[in-house]
Image (tube, rainbow, N blue to C red; front, side, top):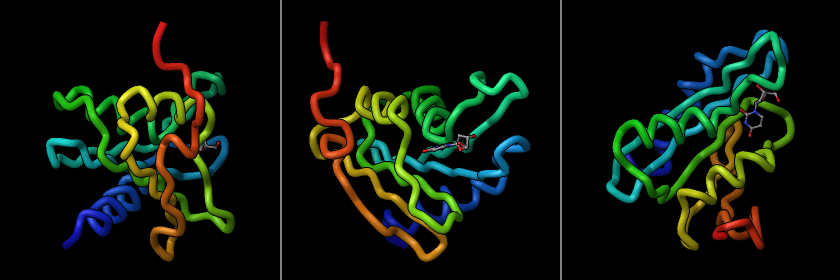
Length: 129
Ligand code: THU
């Protein structure tokens, strides 16, 4: 199985575990790190709405806990009519652990629909101070 298929399968299967009783919108994210390891996460909502976390946050936290710090590719999956794009905060979260080559795949039930670099999704990001 190739990396894209593995990322898709992981993100889709973890989306089934999303805790999303308020939006009913299940999202899964899967990461391939530069050390060729796979990580994934889902969205976890909270009755105090702003406390909820996106799938991308969960996948990044799992990658950090696993000892990796660089995202080679990340795939975001949701079973929705319109393709979803990561929110602004998640673009910044992804950028923190990305290089110029990092790929962001956007997928729905039919597979990967669009692939962009994080630079395209978040140009002029805040990097250093
Ligand atoms: N959500 C994600 O997990 N990732 C995204 O890229 C967009 C939105 C979640 C947050 C919330 O639990 C639900 O989708 C509806 O906004």
